[in-house]
Image (cartoon, rainbow over all chains, first blue to last red; front, side, top):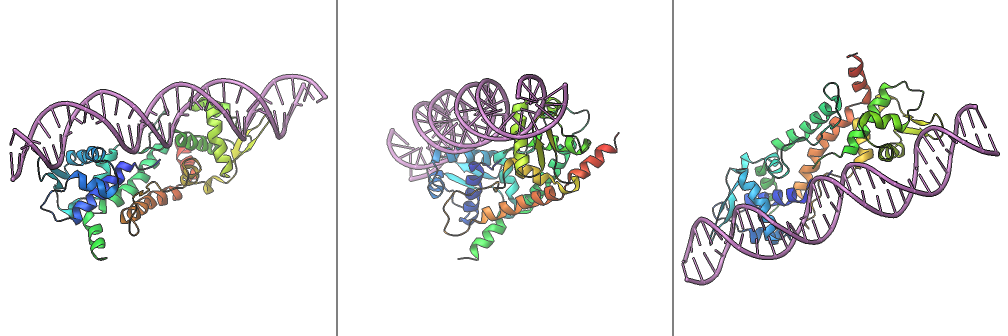
Length: 133
Length: 133
DNA sequence: CAATCACAGACTTTATTTATCTATAATATA
DNA sequence: TATATTATAGATAAATAAAGTCTGTGATTG
């Protein structure tokens, strides 16, 4: 079980957009170069972020992507859910007589991780980055 | 990102062994039937649990598997680690100038889930099961 | 109109997970 | 000791998912 690379790309792209001057959109080309990934592949990932309402896109010359919400309102969990989906990490496929106790505990465990990610905002990371320069 | 079915099989097998009378070993055949999985495949999974020291095996007639520790000393995390490994769920493959802030947060988030799983013992589930019968 | 950009779909490649098959080693018991 | 029973190991195959490519289309700017 691993987080996908796509999630990594998404998180880094978001962090870059947050750190970037907010007005001007950033093209996928530039974002892809910084991460050593092909623009077409990254654009697929970014489209998911657009559909999730985290960023918006502009076509045409000088187009690209920019944030759609304030950075204090974008959590790690928002981004991860946009890429990985929101389904539970654990599915008990066995047919039980009653509810699966194991499943219940696994869902609770996941919930702990999600709570942390829900509370961790992009603005906090941006703050940390700034304090280094 | 999903927990593997193997982890599900492992957890259910452990729960069964915990609920079972402790002395007599249980054969993989019986364990596999209950979960609708092939004995050879399950035995591979169980071998991992053996190597992790959670259960022990006995060859030959009347052989099988049984717990090696007390049920209060076997956590969900022990079982999951035995099957999935202990590596972090998130690897930042980008080459950063310094430590990856995103990675750091992801590791913390994981830690929350692991803390929960570390504290959740087989004995607790067995207790719940008993209270239903 | 031409250059620049995002978007969509089909496709390929690679990696991982889930098994299966077969042979071998260990053990109990008749 | 012989036989049945059981776990273990390795090679391999099949199924699924992840990662990435290619190509064409549509929107926007200058």
